[in-house]
Each structure stands twice: as C-alpha cells, then as structure tokens.
Image (tube, rainbow over all chains, first blue to last red; front, side):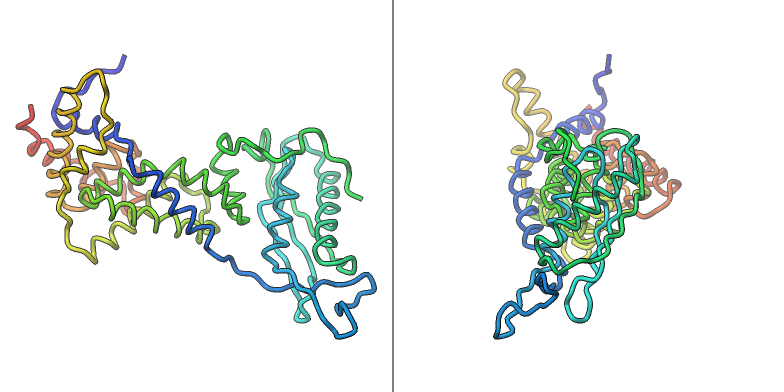
Length: 156
Length: 196
C-alpha cells in the first residue's frame, strides 16, 4: 500500500503529478494542424507510357507525380501487413525526371520467410510504381531487411 | 504478380496500441496520423513540465510544446533510440523553454490558471482548495529557484524521470543533476515549510 505524502513539499509534488493540463486538446490540435501543413521535400516524377515515351499527346504534354505521393502510397500499401513494414523508402530520380530506382528497408516479424516475403514486397512496390507512374516505368526495386522484431511489426 | 494477401493483411485500426518504435518508424515515412498518436501519448506531461518550468504561463507553455513537437516532426530521422522517445521529447521541450527564457522576462503567475488546472473532485472540496493553494505556493517557490534546480526537481519529482534521463534532457551530467536536485529540494522544503 502506497504511503500518503506527509510533508508540504511532498504533498505539493503529489498534487502537481495529478494535474491534467485542461488546454491539452487545443495544443494537440494546433500541433497536428501544423504538422499536416508541413510540406516534406518532393520532386516531380514523369509518367512513362507503355511504349517508353513520356509525351502524352501530339503536343508533347507530360504528366508528373510528386515523389511525395509515390512514397506515401508505397508506405500505405507496404505498411498493412503484420509480417513486415517499411522503415525507409528512397526514390532515385534521374535528370530527365524519370524514376530510376526504389530502395526499401524493411522490418520483419520473427519467423517470416525473409526471401519470399521480400520478393512479395518487391512485386507490390512495382505494382504501385507502374500504377502511379505508368506502365513504362520499370525500375529496380531493392529490398533490404534491416531488422527482425517479435510480434506484429505494426505494433512492436 | 504480387502474392495474395493474408487475412491479417489489413490496415491497423488501433494505432494507439502500437509501440513508440512502431509509430516513430511510420512517422519517419511521413505518416502524420502515427505522429499524432505520439503527440497525444507524450504531450500532456510535456505541457505540464513546460508550464511549471516557464512560471505557470499557459500561453508560453503551449508555444514551447508546439515548437518542440514541430522540431521533433522535422528531425525524427535524427532520433537514434539511444534514449527513450519520452526523454528525447522532454529534451526538445527543455531546449525550447530555455530559448524562451532567454528572450523573455519572467512571466507573473496567473492565479486563476493555477486553480483552473486542478481537476475538481466532488468528494473532497476542502482537499481541492488545499491542493490549489499548495500548488500556487509551489509555483512561487519554483520561480525563485535557479533554472537548473527547478528543471531537475520537476523532471524527478513530478515527471518521474531517472537521473540518467534527466541528465540527457538537460544536456548535463548525472553528477550535476544530483547536485541540482539536492539544492533544489532543500530550498523548496524551506520555502514550503510554513505549510506544515
């Protein structure tokens, strides 16, 4: 059984520990609003057609997708499994604004067949890339398992 | 083609159950919802610490904590896990409070504020009044303490950090923390003695 604080300083410390800041919701909302408004660095990536061309019409029009969007979609798609989750996603973009390479670091759950799972992740990543950047965007996807944890990787 | 997903392969609804490490991992990749869970998990004690440290000002404490979290969001890649996330966040709050203190004169205590932040309980109104007055006295005593003694006492006695964690938070050594705590406790006990 815990002893009640007896001295005035101990009583004051106990009262301070029991405080719940009543304006926390307002501070929390403000933090989240500012975080959402923070723009992460991004570069335009050109969409490539099945024939390997970047021109979308006879006028030479091109379509670009922000690298932030590609990275975010990869995170969403690859982060739903209890067996693995990405901890780093790097996109290499060439001077011609084409995607050149994707590098993904993975944390896997203990007991996962790493090679098989990495191949599955690679295929999923390739599907995201071609979905967003066109069927002509065929790039190497390097997958590195950097850590293994016990349990569901989304929680551990 | 990608292999079929398993039945467990679904978005996680209960992000609140995720560990700090899992949430940091997601936030580093730009998941602001994961970062929001960390904000609500660690924010209230950070706000409490900031408020007592900067002299009881609600506005100043809110600003300090907001700046600390924005700094955390921008520099998550630099968090190496050498200390706990909680200690890292407290360090960011401490630094922001130091910056604020350097640029502003001490702010008088808002008496209404102190009484407002205590949750009133229905069963013991006398105790509520006593706690409220005790906290006002504590804030006055804290305001008279040197900065480092005040910070060390709050981190130890209110937030429950260990000596090593306090040293990391304040950017000093464990030996210095012990010294600040010893002197801070003695001075606070003297100032609070009339409440005995």
